[in-house]
Image (cartoon, rainbow, N blue to C red; front, top):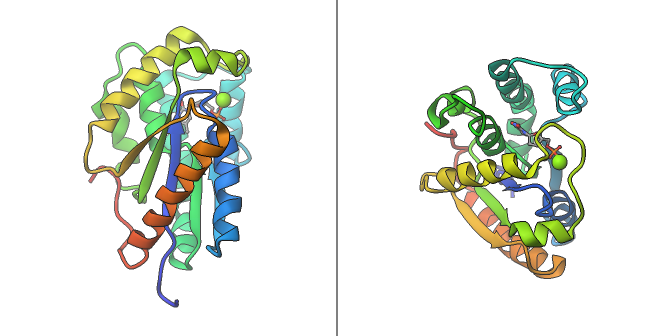
Length: 212
Ligand code: 2DT
Ligand code: MG
């Protein structure tokens, strides 16, 4: 198996779609199937940049909108050497949010366009698979209320959903839409099947560059 790389698998979707739960279960299931697999999340709040982001999200500090956008991107770039090293050593990475969240959220603010928002993330390692967990607002509402973080309002989340839809028109990215209104187990099975296929397809391919 030497020389075969792992796959970069990203989970995206609205709040309460079940991304974090599914990401955790996917890592465990892939490990059980014999794939070396690890989980990552963005924002990664433990780094110095991540602490600035965490404080912004928790409304403990205010940052100018372009500035926070660039910090989210920097928070990904600072992990890129580690991500490449793991992929090259054969480890599959399951990532809870990536550049698509970055673009969908910032471009939902006044006076930001998709093009500008994408630029800082151009050239990041390209995901081999982006699993979009789609859940209706009605089903999301049955999963409890929002927390108290800055983007957690219905009006903002509606804008974010529209931006995700625009991003999904981009056929250079391997998007797979999964109906996350189904029960957890069904969703899990679908994610697992799609992921195993992506791992198989990626193993002898070079790591791509996002949006280039
Ligand atoms: P969690 O609830 O998943 O911790 O996300 N966000 C995330 C951005 O605005 N830009 C980004 O680049 C990323 C990765 C989405 C925290 C919030 O941060 C938003 C929700
Ligand atoms: Mg959240």
